[in-house]
Image (cartoon, rainbow, N blue to C red; front, side, top):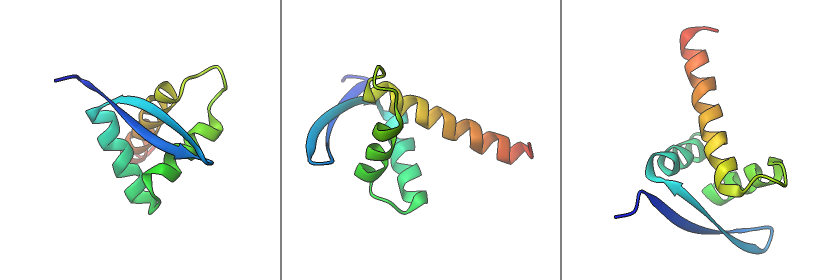
Length: 78
């Protein structure tokens, strides 16, 4: 069993794929649920904001990490 799973998504009418480890994917799904938006919409949002030299998979991992840090800061009262 691979630690990384490849998934496909359509962003602005263009089919693309990304590869994430299950914990990153699970957190991405949780973030989309918390925001009340489809996962594809969240992926499109991250894609639109990423630097063009960064690949989508890396951008998604960094987004999840950033959200985790923001949540930790809120819990600690920073």
